[in-house]
Length: 220
Image (cartoon, rainbow, N blue to C red; front, top):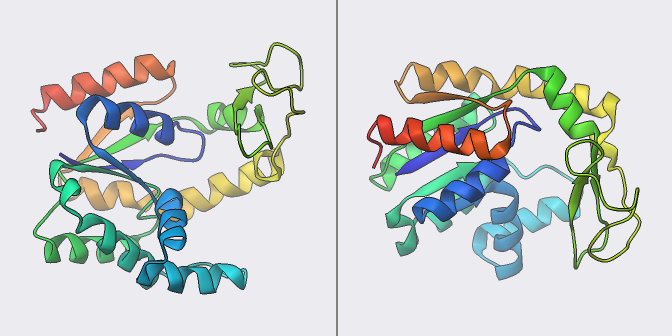
């Protein structure tokens, strides 16, 4: 099973990917996590990526693809994988197609978590995070509030509202997603790969719907 998750910021991709990876014994490949891992391990792609990051520049597509090639070539990925956060645009999708063909692999399904912007904004703007790097707990003012307002339950550090979770930034993030990433839905629909899941329910309900859909379409 080789899956790709699509969904706007706040749709719950990370949560669903982690649950599905655990349920199915798949490797969850988050672009951010892979980037940090490659840099930490000092792989060829990681060294190149670090050079761009240290200068405050975006990591170019060819370096990201090299990083994914390093990871997807590893033996444990033969069991299957879940891609999360990559590709983000049509050029990256074309590069991913070429890479998978080179590795004699292919996507079996593309999961589209469909969620309205109003709900997405509520989910993101209400998020509060613990800045303690040894904790990194995440709360929500409405859906998962801490026991004491503004304070982490686990380490009692004062919670913060990240700058990219503030309303004006969230609207920009959603606009960028609509412009750059949303066209991938049609791209993969044309390949007959898209499975659309209602992402507006409780995460456990979304996950059960995801499992039911994957099982009914006989994805192995």
